[in-house]
Amino acid sequence: MKLIGPFKQIIPMTGLTVKGAIKDEELVIIENGGILIDGDRIHTVGKFNDLFTKAKSSHAEIQELSSDHTCLPGFVDAHTHICFAGSRANDYALRNSGKTYLEISKAGGGIWDTVTQTRKAPKELLVKGVVKRAKRHLANGVTTIEVKSGYGLSIHEELKMLIAIKEADSILPIDLIPTCLAAHMVPKDFEGTPAGYLEEITNELLPKLLKEKLTSRVDAFIEEGAFTPSLIEPYFNMAKELGFDITVHADQFSTGGSEVAIKHKAISADHLEASTTKEINLLAKSDVIAIALPGASIGLGCAFTPARKILDAGGSLAIASDHNPGSAPMGDLLTQAAILGTFQKLSNAEVLAGITHRAAAALKLSDRGQLNEGYLADLCIFHTADYKEILYNQGNFKPCMVWKKGELVYDK
Ligand code: NIG
Ligand code: FE
View 1 (spheres, rainbow, N blue to C red):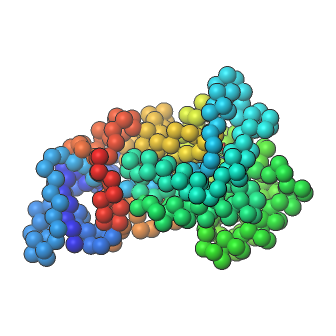
View 2: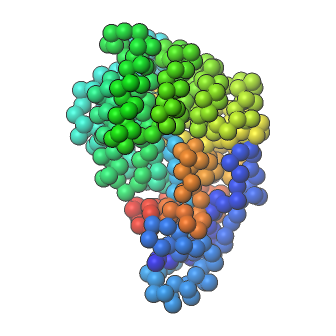
View 3: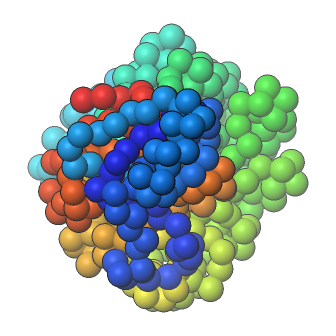
């Protein structure tokens, strides 16, 4: 057993609903608290002095903090594309000189450019890239990262990506949650119809993913230039029949995707920058978790996801980085979540829930996102006496320590 503390504040993110607005006053704050850890799990969260006596008598290792610290659950980044090769710095420059994301994509840049680079890269290079980027996320307090494939776009190359993600996961102290995004766009070199491509993926890739335990999650990009709702329908039906969980890139530039997400009982609908009142209300009534991706809004210079309206309508909101080489190259969840909070008028509680408790729900992970008995001992620790300092500094205040499954894995 280990005891860590005393913390000036522990923000356990407990007792919160998954849906709807949250006021800061609703946040539980434990003052002068401690966390008793048993193996990879939290044994008790309570007052440090009480736990100290208990720890002493059971000969627990005690990590005493001598200055003011605040502890939150390790952050969960529920949507990234950090497995890729190459750079799209040129796309970025083109966009900033007036070309749109879709124009660049139609001219052969965009996602297809990264597909070309990623296909050329040996698997080992992809593993290295994932590890390097994941470590950057760890320094932001992220202890769980969802990682999508989607730059392979053939059976062989999608498998290569998902195996690279699995290998990176085995090297890293933090958890990677893989997702198959073979339906990112129709590969330009596929000799057949878009429906034929999806059929091939359904018949030849999805069963292999289950057999090799590479992922149980399937994503698709519903958009002009990618897949229409009607094209994706049989693909999602089959994926669900095989037991996959569904998540959707929805309403990024035009609507349609969120309705697909609701219809197929997706766990999450991500992006939603173009969602109108109609989509917001439908999402709020459903169990689909909306995931805002402020990194894509910042990367593309586009509107933010209407996070305030989603929460006020009673919807659930997680926030993720979407870290990818094209639309979201920054890859800094804390900064992006803080900025979304400023532009969308979100409370500290709503932003923090969006990267902890609600982000874990968006990945169907019920063992993290809160500091509570039996949960994973994933801790994100800041050198401050007041948790409000964290978002106030708009990302320019990073954690000083991160613990994963009961071990110190980052110490600044
Ligand atoms: O989430 N929208 C589609 N997919 C990614 C971007 C991928 C890319 O541009 O490489 C996204 O923004
Ligand atoms: Fe994405």
